[in-house]
Length: 556
Picture 1 (spheres, rainbow, N blue to C red):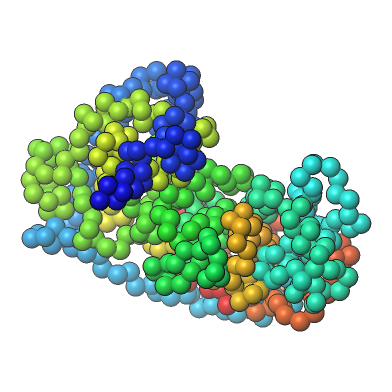
Picture 2 (picture 1 turned 180 degrees about the vertical axis):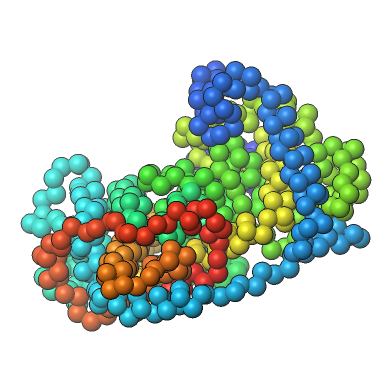
């Protein structure tokens, strides 16, 4: 019983171990309040909590009133709009809401015809050729080299880095790949992957492709880069791996590849995390570690994203967290005050006078909330470390109670928005469908070794995910270029192409890509002509209308 209690308090951060890395006192990593004060004004403007000129007045009372207004406005809007909300029904006895399922009208005939025509015209490609051409165009290969920072002492670093990325990205072992790739040995590939590639450098190369993809006109058909969806997919490891954990959900050993997928289909960031880890702690971490020029402000997630501390931290860092809501029975709505009553939606909040926000607690913990948020933003403490400690069950941690209370406010606001805004629900569904399609597509690319991660070293497991993300992003970027080139030819032939139809064309196309056989390296020596990022299609109407439609492309 003693050890069970101790383990629980270690998990929540109520007890710390001096000198420990995993269970150290995380509060010691926070910036001092004096340092936070110097940065606070600029920080508040940067994350959207205050406008220029408001920062001087932004104190505990201002923060409290801001949250109160947000909750009152959301509840009032939901109550006023309920009579006209045909998709929402609230049980007056239980207060449980139910939403009528949205029935998609399906793909327009013109969009289906366009998709079939583009698929028929997609040129035959090999994964090696795709990697080589994107390496010439984007020069992501220049990110890699020895840890010393010196120039690589390789006869052909371009070719070696492209081949290594192909081998590791497809999850083939170096010695198995060498049997099918002329001119290289397994030792050369293994040495290059170990000595010339690191997690930091792989992240930089991935960001290069993300930035190049964002400059393509065709990417505007899918989004504007302001939204991202986060989700994980199970990756198999060997059972005799000391670091493997058995997934309760999948009932087999492995880990989780946790991806942040932009609304333009490309992967911004990828983690490899153990099965036993609470996935929600990595929702914010991936956004903060994203080094590309694409900076999303809205993040969608699955039901694991519905945590009070995660909602609170997302709000304090300037992110609009909107997860996909599925189970309304366990959702609690919080009132702004005991006196707050509503004509139509009062049953949502339970008994009158119950489930009320503790505004005094939020106001009293203002300094600590700001101290934590600025410390995370400045990199003094990681968001994943923080959220691992701010979990339910803490009875002594004042930081948890403050984050819980702010999270209750933001989560209630987001639940009310989700119930009352049908286009928003469709956007969330479309975003989460997109990340699920990416999971299938990246696994299609990483076909080697039957999808099993063979490495036991957690650093190498993380690198395996990064290699796969780099290769997958290269294929997405190349597919986008091929689609744009086909559209240009079709326009020249007199086709009328609507942007609403192009948004249905997913870059997760696979039918034209060969994966097996002998992996010829002759394309490494063929320098392609410069690509054209421009496309004579006006995508502005897509930003003015609801971009959430059914029918996002599925990976083969």
